[in-house]
Length: 220
Ligand SMILES: [Zn+2]
Image 1 (cartoon, protein in one colour):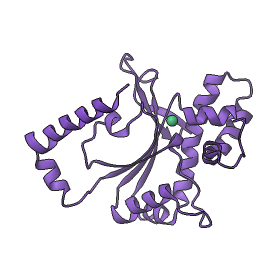
Image 2: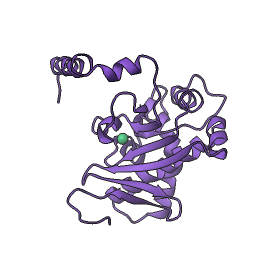
Image 3: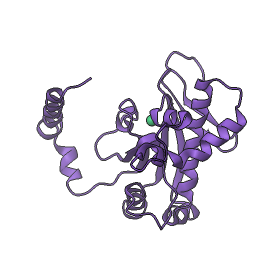
């Protein structure tokens, strides 16, 4: 794990690469950003979207939060950072696609599935936030009552991606651009045990491999 001194060394390398050796990229980015994609990912330290997807600065507009969730667009709630950032990406930056990037071994989903002893206590921000995915937990418990813990967690991680996609579709700004065909939505799932990437297929109603694990010859 990196300590603070190592992070400063890391910035020195970044500075050398982008501002001394090849400053062209940031010279252009100073004029403004034009990312093609909004990625909504988990804040988990193991699943950095830019690193996973091989992106340079300026390539993707990123929102990260616990379990890569999109809350329902309820006008009655107070200031909402996630919805504000989505609206900005869709209306102002005019991104062409939105990817909800979930992952295996998600601590947020694990907390949701386990339930917290202090759930409902004022100030329990984790349970309050994760309640967005409660319909996913209920669905998994209903459909997989006999399954083991790992299978249920995996199912809930994937079901919660679908909840975020549903909440995205219920945002006015997103719906308008889906209807005129200028925006597409995607649900992706990174398995950090085997290093594979899956995408949700509405036709199959399942997450299908985009890229299989590095050691596999063909998708499974
Ligand atoms: Zn996570």
